[in-house]
Length: 295
Image 1 (cartoon, rainbow, N blue to C red):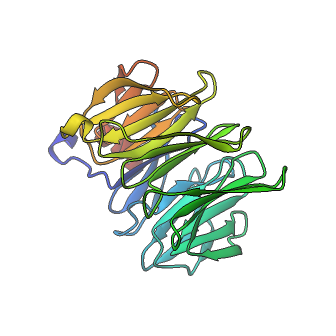
Image 2 (image 1 turned 90 degrees about the vertical axis):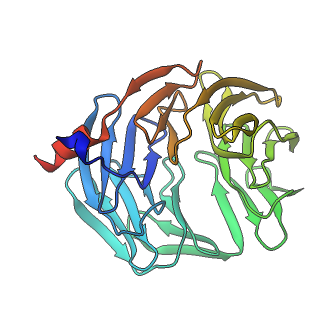
């Protein structure tokens, strides 16, 4: 029976705009529709892919990397490889909504044209985050430990001192940028007011994931070691800096927000509502992934 040999999850990534997830194992990345509980496709991965995977800005696309084996882009429905790039020893991949670029973290930032795999720009020692729809970017200086917000539309540049050496997670709304640091601090910047509206540390160790829901006009934060216990915690964050506790969740290694911030998926297969922290459903990774293998 499939339950006798559980599939080991190496990472979990969401297409934030919809219900699709990438469930990474040691040998393959399975693209799963959490709404229909069906596997849409799969692509091969290396044993060290882990967090080096993300959806791409093109329909039905993803990027998969390896510490030693470079970077490849796929159409995950057909399994066709779109391009490959001999870029190794990087730590993560990230796309920015529908923008055609993807970011590779490699002692700084490497921006690529996703359609061709061509390197557009290399920015050493700066961790860059592009706004998904506006000509705004946030850049964290690894060397000087500060955040710089550049608004090309207004030709402004604002520097913000950091309490830590890196950015752990982040999220954009139309008018705000919120990020967390390994020190456990949560910082919010208002684009309209060009100032910091929040800088706080709550009853947690770290904020490992952030998202924004436009309908509710709220950010959501997933935190570790809630109140000193080995539990995850779910909080909402307003654009005035108000933080509200929603739920205590199981302590699992991987998680991701999906469906435009309405839901949270955990690597144990559970899907939770961010509205009230209620369990919505439980996915059986074994059944879904092995059904795909048998097609």
